[in-house]
Image (cartoon, rainbow, N blue to C red):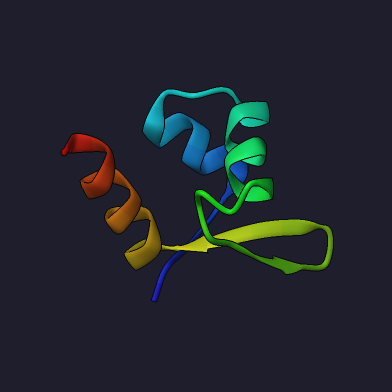
Length: 54
């Protein structure tokens, strides 16, 4: 399973890193913390993208 950092997600979604961090903080984009980084699974990111398209 692949995991993405907030920086990678910002590039994929075309959002700023701060916006992605806000989505994570507000639990709109579920993530978990490893060390000082938040990581989002590939499946979670796909679900988030699908939900945005509706």
